[in-house]
Structures are given as C-alpha cells and as structure tokens.
Figure 1 (cartoon, rainbow, N blue to C red):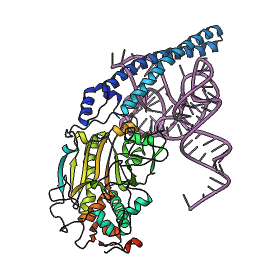
Figure 2 (figure 1 turned 90 degrees about the horizontal axis):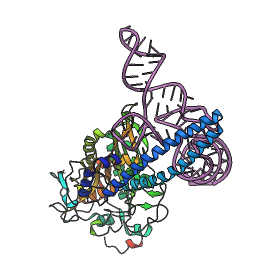
Figure 3 (figure 1 turned 60 degrees about the vertical axis):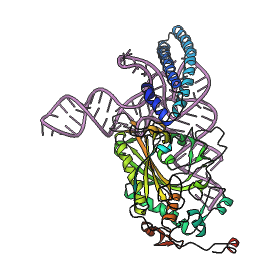
Figure 4 (figure 1 turned 135 degrees about the vertical axis):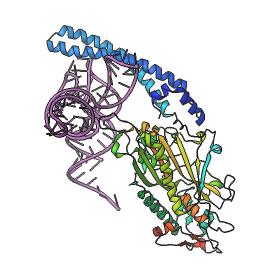
Length: 457
RNA sequence: GCCGGGAUGGCCGAGUGGCAAGGCGCACGCCUGGAAAGCGUGUUCCCUCACGGGAUCGAGGGUUCAAAUCCCUCUCCCGGCGCCA
C-alpha cells in the first residue's frame, strides 16, 4: 500500500506508475476523497476540542457544587455531540472509501525497471551453465511421459482421488521431492536462513497483508464457503505461497535494528486454483493445484533492500548451480510486474523436452522456478511491519523481499529431462545423492495392478 | 466443548465513571578529572507550513454531558475439567 501522504504529494509519480503497470484506477477520485476527508477531519477535531473543554468544565463545576452552571454545560455538550456525530460519520465513510481505494493502488516500479507493456518486453539479463551441457538423448522424453513410464508420477489416479490438476509422486519420485526440499533447506541454512514451518491455512487479513487480497481472490482455495461470497478478515484460505504466513509472522509488530536483516526460509505445499490454465504448456506437473516450494523471506532496512535483492537472487541461483541445471535470469518490465512488486527477477530453468516457441534456440523451453521480488515498503505498510533503528526513535516501515528457493515440481521436470539417459533412466544430480540414500540413477518401479497386465513395456 | 481469570506504551505495571500513576530500557543534557550514581528532558499514531489540535488502554457495538473503568458481541492468551491423533 502506498501512504496517503505519498499519494497526496506525488500524484504524478503515481499516475505514471499506474500507466506503466497498465492499471486503471481513478486517481483523481482518490485525491478528491482525501481532500474532503482532511477538511471534515479538521472540523471534527475542532468540535471535539470544544467538547473536551466543556466536558472537563462539567467536572470542575460539579466538584465546586455549581449544579446550575453544570447543567447548562451539559446541554451545550449535548448539542456538540449531535453535530460531531454528523461530521464524523461522513468523515468515517470517506476514510473507509479512501482505505479501500488505497488497497487497490499498486506498488510504484523502481526507477531501474525497464518500461514495457507485457511479458514480451521482459529483459533477459544472462544465461548460466550452458557452456558445458550434458549429452542428451536424441529425443528427450517429456517428464509426464517418462514419469508415468517409470512409475514415479501418477496423473490418472490423482484425478480419481482429488480431481484434475493434482499428481501423485510415487516411490523414487516421492523420494526425489523430499530430497529436493531437504537439499534446498540445507543450502539456504548455510546462507544464514532460519527455518519456519508455517500453518497452511491463513486468514483473509494475512492475504491482504502480502497483497494477494482484495484483488486476487479467485485463485485461492477457500476452506469454507464459496470464493464469490464476501469474506471476513479471519476467514481461512489455503496458502498460495509460504510468503503469506512468513511475511505476516511479524504483522503489526515493531522489530529492533539488531534483528535486521531477518532471513527466514519456509518449506510448504502451495495451493492454487489456476482456473482456466490447461493445455500443452501446462501438461504434467508444470502447473498444478498443489506443489512444494521452499520460500525465502527477508525483512530489511530500507537502505539495504537494493543490495539484499541482488543477494537474494544469488541465494536462489545457488540451488541451480549445485544441481548443475542450466538456467537464465529474466528481469520483468513494468507491465509484467505484479501488483505488489517494485522490482522482480525470474529464474527460468531449461527443460529440454518440449520445444516451445519462446524457448531457447537449442530446443526445449524455459520454466520459471523462482521469482525474486523487492516489495520495498509496500507489504510492510499493508501489514504494518516496522522497525526501530534506535530505541528512542519512532518506528518506520521496513522493506520486505522474497524469492522462491525453489519451486520443486518444475525442478523435478528439469531433472527428469536434463538428466535423462538414452536408456530411459535418469541420473541423480551429484549434489542430491546424499539426500537419496546414495542413489545414482532413478530406474523406476514396476506398475501395480490390473492395468499393468496389458502393457507391453 | 464447559467453567474461571486475563489483554493498558519498546518492556513491566497501577488505575472500578471526570486530563493514562510509577518503574525498566533507550537517547540527549546537567553534574564529574573520567565513569557510575544522581538530577532534568524526551521516547505511539493522525491532521496542520507552523502555533496547536485530535485520537489511542485487544476488536466492534451500546449506556452516559463524560468510558481504560459499566453493558453486549467477537478474537486471542492463561488455568482447570472434558474429548482426542
């Protein structure tokens, strides 16, 4: 959320940001409501001032035993009360409208962010680990076919049990998920992160604190009731990312300067409805309703957030460097920045099987496995998270950042495809072997059940 | 789930209808050869260029000229009982 004062004093900056982000909000209306509110507020303050004076006079008069004068003052006070009620009711309405409107204003992009209309104008910053790629089979099999063939991914049974868009990881596939999670947590722990295992249901108020709500309710899983119905601030939703509980961990708190920078990492499953997202680009486990992810969340001093942003990117990249998976870094342009973000990088891993139009020249495609964002004070203001530099100073909003480190299923896709061997087995990346009981290759499992009888392989 | 007790500033803590005590911490000043101690000032948010004013005692509503204080609803915490993987 932008501060009222900032919007009031920098309307042109806000207007430009709205345009660059492609957001349509009636800024003039907000400015007008703010001005009217301030007028009413100062009128109300004056009335209240008078009432306070009358009120304390009543106390004095009563104590002095002057009942007649006291009665007169009480009548005056009653008049003021009625007048005050009028003014304040109107002021409260305006303030509520103002607050609601401010919640819908997006973060201002950082000055350094390239201006662009949509994702086609994002800027590729660099590619890593492409100098010495593995020898791949002539035809790399897509992860969904290979995964089923190896008996480590189950889609039909997941659809039976839970519905479309879910998957079972089985046997060595399940081991791979666990291994990746533990491996990532170890890497980030070395980088100074403290582990958090959060509650999976989060209240609406928390979704608002990180900026998912009020605009984006349709993608969340609501625990009770329908998404179309109005919600209360303590209604529960399944978390779409651990960013929500972890950032809200310190909601309405004041941290001390010695606490900062504060680096948390959280493994959690993530739940997203992904309405309407079906097709060849999302086959398999590329876009599912539930997936594992390790998320890094940082709380920092405002002056440190730029530097921490680059550090966070490097911390996420470290996972791919150790897994030896080729990837690229993409910087989002203004039009592709999310609602809450001032600046954002995506890390996209190379998945060589399916050739996609937007993929690299050598074939395959890019899969976003991490999104590293600087929210500056946008979330901190919504969630009211502050810090105090010196104990006697007043508190100010700190900066929050986060980055996935990383999304597990898409890493599974990259491993199944990039580490694929001509015989249909998959080599386990060396860094991961200690987490897989020393396993060097994923060779899969025999099928289970009647459906296995007619299969010819 | 039932019964009881709670929620006051960065922290502790008094306050049961009439301007929210006191202590700790922190900062600055005085004092001192220097320090400690001591003394003084400051230490929430909003409006205002400022002077100043307003709000604030878990949240929301009510009673009253006036609510931290009385009444109602809710949230969370603590204790006891019950149930439970």
